[in-house]
Structure formats: structure tokens, C-alpha cells
Length: 255
Image 1 (spheres, rainbow, N blue to C red):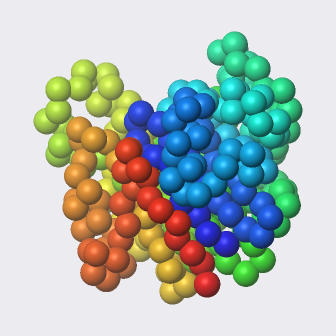
Image 2: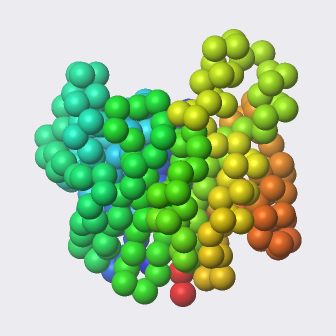
């Protein structure tokens, strides 16, 4: 199993997970053209995508899903609440598969474990992916870490973790006060210290890759996120990967 990011940040998010003959796109917050170009950088053709999973209805995660799914005839998997929110936004999903936020399911060579997260969306979820040998955990767009989140991300071989902001940078930014409260609130986004605390609360002995993701370009810095996660793991800062908006990150293999 391997994984990569097309891009990560407030302007658009998408992750690809590849196992055997199965290639799953997790979210697509990019235009058709941009998604195709970003996939091409990873040597993947749009026609190779098996399915799209959606975490929640916010535009930076879902804006390109409908057109991508329609153009390439792939099913879209999402919760009932997310589906209602997407449809309310006048987006049409031609092949829609509703999922339960607590029930695992399979797509091709991958077993997928959704789990609910606290975020200001209709029914948001994040996912753990397994090929039977390795587990990849993904957690972005969550305002706080719940005991269930900890349980789901325990004993993973790779983690993609939200490090959205540094509290001091957010507090001193020119964002409106209401937006600052939303980002820092329990239904907003994880900061660097919260992500680090999560790592300290789970078994990390199997980790081969840790990626800091969904960084705010204004309210965070890559070295701050990497330093926080490295401190929690007791590893070198250079061992931590950081996803960016323009290029995401390249393929990471689990062996």
C-alpha cells in the first residue's frame, strides 16, 4: 500500500491511496483540470481511480468531486449527512454510495474504517485504510481529539495528521475574531500541540511515515508543525513530512 497527496490546505485537499488494483481518492477540492494535472505528477491517470471518498461537504474538500465522478464514472462514498449537505449545494453525484460513520466497508483491495470527528459540518468523518498488512490513518478537519479518534488511530503504520495552526500566530493574525474562535474551537481545526498530544496518546511503534497536513499558510509554518510532531515522537524533525498546498507530497510506501 502507498499513499500521496495532490495538495493540502485551505485552497484544496485530496489524498490518493493505492493498493493492488485499487486507487481511492480521498476528497477532491480541486478543479477537474487541476486534479488531472496533480494526478499526472504522481503518474496516475484519472481513469485509474476506483472510487472517491468524501470526508465532509466543505468546498476545499468537495468542490471537484461531482464533476470528477461524473466525468470518469466512479462511485462516491459519503455519509448520509454529508450527502444531504452536498445535494443542498446543488451538486449532483451520479453514483452515490452512503456509508455509516461507524461501519467498515471494502473497496477492491482496501478495507476502510470510517470514524466520526468533531467539525462544523453535517456528518464529518475521517478514515483508516488497510490492505490487510498495514494501516494508514488520516485525520484532518477536527476541532479536538476524542477517545474514539485515539482508538481508531492507534497502532497505525502511517499517519496524516492535521496541524492547521499555531495558536500564537492565529491569535495575532488579521482574521476576524469570529473566524479565530471558529478555527480554534472544538469544532474547528487541530493546532500543532493538539496533533502532538495525539501522537503521545497512541502506540506509535509501527509508524513508518508521519505527515503534517492541512497547514494554514497564514497561521502556521512547516517547521513549527514538524518540530511539534518530532518532539512528541522523540525523532529528528527531518523525519516528519509536511504536506503543502501546491504539491501535497509524493508517494510514501508502506513495507
